Length: 401
Image 1 (spheres, rainbow, N blue to C red):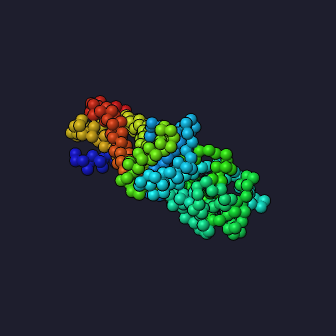
Image 2: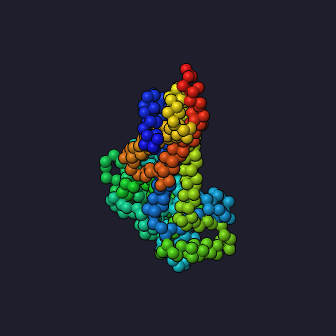
Image 3: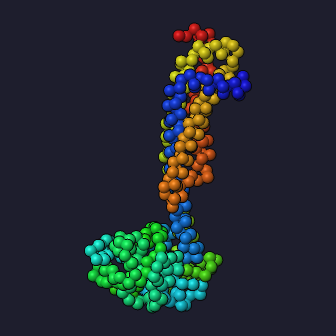
């Protein structure tokens, strides 16, 4: 009996029990769909975060107040012996070789009001350098003027959605926007950008950093983005930045300076672990599907006892009988795996169509791994029924009712 004969015989047996076959196929398909979709979500998240950092360029240092010895996402809040001040960041740009520009920032929230319309919004304190470092594009007007960082002129730049919601089609340039108890003149509207690094720039108000610090009674900045002249210079400039601030803080190292590479490596490592965990959870459903295949094949052996006896009476060896049933199980799992893969890829394509900013796609290893595991599960759980069929005595099998 050739391999083709074995597969054809097994396929015919599966067609003879279409409902049972369909249910087994469904179990495997659900398992493979789960594996591919969940790993696609994890990989999509990793690619999305990588793209967010890449949009800022590859030559950035992130300076935050407080010291941490780990490569986590952010150092502990509070507890730093010295504030990270505007003067500290100005000193970096003036005294540290390799620093192209430094953009300190501060964050707060306030109620934005124009006429009788209000909404809660994020208020960012920044300088003119923030525009170039964050790759901000203006739709109309200008960004914050290039004055001293501690300037406190009552001007602001607003996001596209904020203009739409508060000004309702009116030209916002030159109008006065109230933030809490203070009035700011709108000098620019940013082009629509969407969410970048966790901040929706379409919904923020940007004011001069000095004004922001007074408005929210802050003494330390939230963080600073330092753009370096070249990617190769990052390690040396990072050390120089730490030493420069240390010299200004009574020789105490109380800031954390992170590179984009270290942040990306941390994010990538955590998201890769998440993707693997999701794949493991989804693989459990494949094991359940394998148990279902085994049950189906055991029932099939019981129902086809006479058929097995006839095959052995005609000269089929135990090995050939075993291969027939293993081939049936493998066919079930392979067909279910392909069906599940098709559903998962179609669903991923739909997600990318409706949410084009989220690059949902399976990692390179996910598709072959899901198909191989589904095939292996089917064959593994098909061995026991196949062994039972192969051990049947032909005379007893022919006479059994």
